[in-house]
Length: 221
Image 1 (cartoon, rainbow, N blue to C red):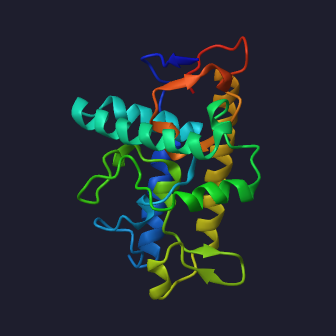
Image 2 (image 1 turned 180 degrees about the vertical axis):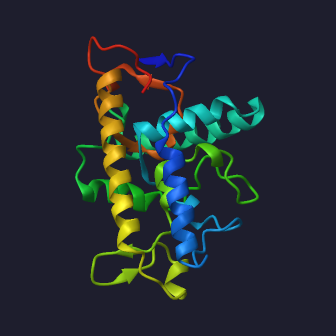
């Protein structure tokens, strides 16, 4: 059974702006060498998980779009959800993937690796840029395992990489800790049973009753 979401959302988190500002400062430190500029939408193609915190932000953005644009994005997301539930029927009863094995998640992601984000516009821009998920706000910063620095995407493998300073990495870890705390607080407040879901589900305005703990309050995360 599906339940319509209430018309109001919880107050926006400051974490989204903080993450965007962190990325801007890292990019400046890296001498504007990141390929993440307008016109590059490589990271906007492919299925990936987002959190219930990201879903709040996406839903907030959808409410502010013109009806025609919002409906088009929601239709794309709905078609992707239909394909996902056909490929992984367990999503019919619980859309959260927190308890899935990594190999099962990877298998679904690989199957739908050519999918564009529902918010990706024909001209390669993001229709919900101001309300994009946290992962989209930090994507592009080179990965660092303490030994080597590697590109965050295929484009970066062709450009020289500079190691991000320890201070930026510490701030990144702090932001990750804040994200975990806010997700847990949101989950407890709403009674939602999971934290992560595949991207298209974040654009859907209704939740299955099974996605919330019996007897809990609002089904809107």
